[in-house]
Length: 323
Image (cartoon, rainbow, N blue to C red; front, side, top):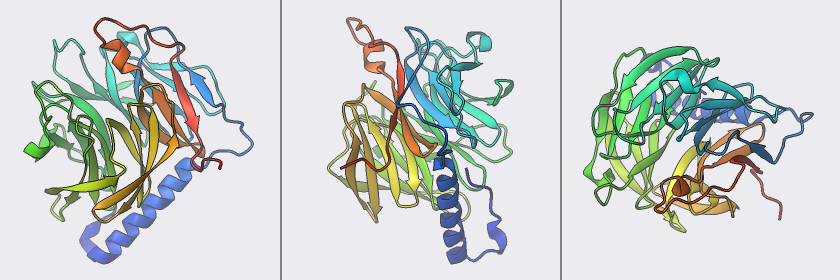
């Protein structure tokens, strides 16, 4: 993660270069694993009902993965193949979508898949000690989160086409961007999903339409207009998304692929890094590789019910596929 930069004494052009360099350095450090530590190709998650929806990584390479079905967050330390519980079933969290590590804090989108209670963003210490709760409000669903360089947290709401913001040091989420073009195309569908911060802008994707959008963050912190990015070939059911560097995004598509998007103005070119993944839901870069959760969430909500393929797993994917 990058650190906050005081823009009040920094010319805009220099700030852009500084933020770009900081992002590139942070991502490079996150991707650097210990070459002496062999990395497994698969990490098996516990139990028959985990259904992992999102994951994140701390600076030391620990992977944190949340369960949409049990509400747990488990962690794999670098070099470990057995998960340890960080947020247990007694935490009050019944389902987890987004997972994000920021410094020494763990943020989760706490959801109720029966929709009997409102969605929250909850924060914990990395050992699972509860810190804070930030409620989105009725009729909203927190899907994913990202921080900007100033320490503001942004949250995608899949139901309204809204991005909410928790200001650095703030105590409540507030609507930051509301755009009808980002709302679900049909009532009951899931719209906004993955979110990434890159060089003063947010990139958002939509699960239902496959759209990718860029939203500039103005000098006063307000949202610019949502600009649609033309992706070739087009994205289909994009879910979790993270930045590889200042010009490249990684995005999973629930049909089974991990794609690398090369950004160029208002266009992007997609190339596949992995195919045949089992309903992937999220991606993170750590230990020199991409790690993808095979969420199988479609089987969880299928009518009639479908049995999952066990064990639930996190798959490691090379960032430079062999030819």
